[in-house]
Length: 287
Ligand code: 13P
Image (cartoon, rainbow, N blue to C red; front, side):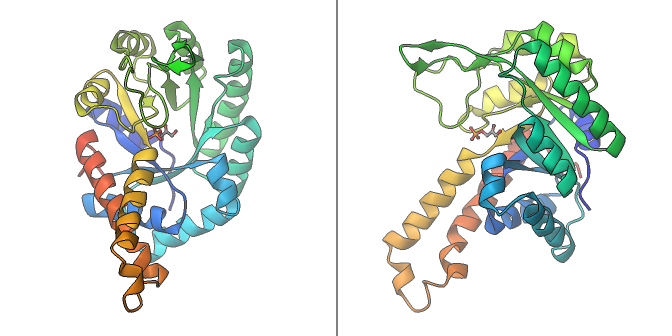
């Protein structure tokens, strides 16, 4: 059964480790992440962006697939199915479809509007026992069209949103989605420390997990990050393994063209990547 992310994240915050949020794109992705979480006895969050939701034929299809897998694969570790960077309407649609967790990303609204909309979703998710992630942060650090620093949130605004009673809070601290540019300034640990000071026990979320050096990940966890989002890195290893299979001509040998064979190296690559991240985040054995 899907669970809210609240308990797993509060435990992670208290225990100074982080739970991995891994974005899913299809059946292979979902199966790879769930099996690895079960093998490692780790709690896990499956992230679904609105785009991936459309790609996978809508939220109901995803809820059906994930619930089916939990049962058929006998998954016993805590699993949350979470909308990633949701709009207000998207969050409501996921709640209706059976997600156990949603993110409302109001970071592009003026702070008053972000507060208003987040407040409404707090009331709704509270009533249903679901978890809610909110986001604060303005785009910053762009120079000559090159993003050098990513988003840096205002710690006071973070406190305002945290005080609304959200489950977890994503705050920009210089992190960026996708690959980091060569001139990336790194994470702003001063900002993170200030946010953590003002928001206390609130689990903090680090987006853009791909490409952040291990020592920065560990430091971020020590400063209150308890959920780390990873997407691009799984896509990269999947593509690399699939490319290798085809370049070696394996699809041309016997029944190598069978999708169950063709997609297997990518599936195994995702499993290895998720394992590596769970070990780094410290969530192994915490289920
Ligand atoms: P990356 O694609 O950079 O790993 O970021 C994932 C993410 O933050 C999803 O919300």
